[in-house]
Image (cartoon, rainbow, N blue to C red; front, side, top):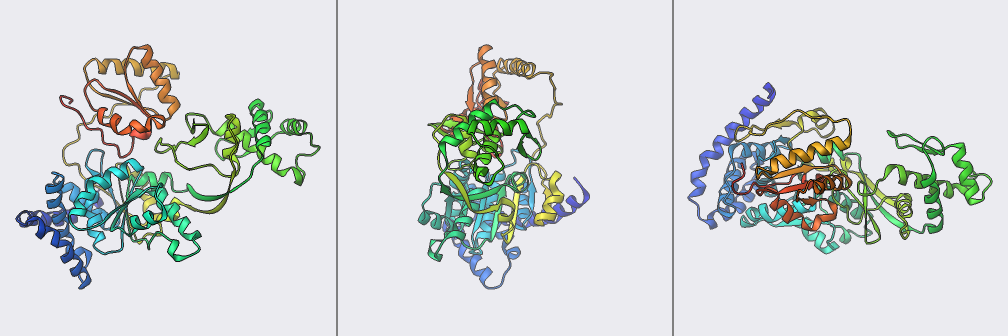
Length: 493
């Protein structure tokens, strides 16, 4: 850790000492006395005290309630993480250090201001889990806790946002902002001004997905026939013969040969004439559907519909579609019924949405590498938090193979070896397709396994719960990545 980091930590350790000295005081309180502290803190803030003035007591109260309600006591390093978040910075904490419990501290403290706290998770599963678990602390202390998920109607949304603390996925908060901006009357709006947000896996949300546009679109009719003909053409086309495609910029265009084939197929003289603009667009989108989107990697086909897969989380993006006719081009590629096209009505990037908050904070296991960007774009410092116990994990060097088949054979042999000792094994893959390929190799080797990907999302809770048990083999996409706690079973070391 750097000298600057050490200096910052020294300041936090002083506060931690204060919190620890208050522990015996609040241990002596009965439940009612602890619950009364919430109103006392609110009054103190109204009478001119600052958040800093009440931090030590508020953290000590949350720690005591957590012990009683969840049976969990915040470690000193978790208190430091909470202090970092309270100030609107990023706490870099390795996996397994209890980031979920850390968030209980600043979310309570900042909620006392009465302006709302948003706790952002990477998926609905974690939002529901954390709201149910950590929400018990806050509800015990008299605060209201809401859950913001896509399935809610406007009244339920309004209730979720009026809660003291609201859990949900960042994109859903962004879409609600867009919907509010399109509302004709103030009564239709669901959100209130943006005050304080805690973002779990902050580098994934604010850096990896920063430029991802959130788009709300209206429907417009599209020609089913044109899409299907364009799809047949695109299937026959070869790169650099009928079309050119730039991997980096995704720029797609037809070559002279490609244009001739399109003109011949549709019986037109000049594809570049204004009246044939739509036709050209359909063909370009058909080509992009073939070269940019792979089945069981970027999307799955479920009940005759194209369901998009989030590349960051490995999950199905419910209700999301691609705009500009691209979704329809994929439907045509898969021989499905063509739905209406989307016409953009409002959009915002994740980055621009979160920059509207007065205070922004975050947690992750990996933020130091992007520290400069966090400082420049969001004015946030990254503080590395020490681990509670020395790290036991061993990081081994990468092994590189000449072919994918060699790699899968080696993975299978290694899994077989570990499995023979009764150890649980988690095999991480980057897509549904890859997870299914690994499964075939395991089948041939006679290994029994569970598979967690966007197709088996209904069994997620059971599969995660079983993944740490003796003799269990689990193949997973990055659905089992960020924020997922796999607890080791009995007799597993």
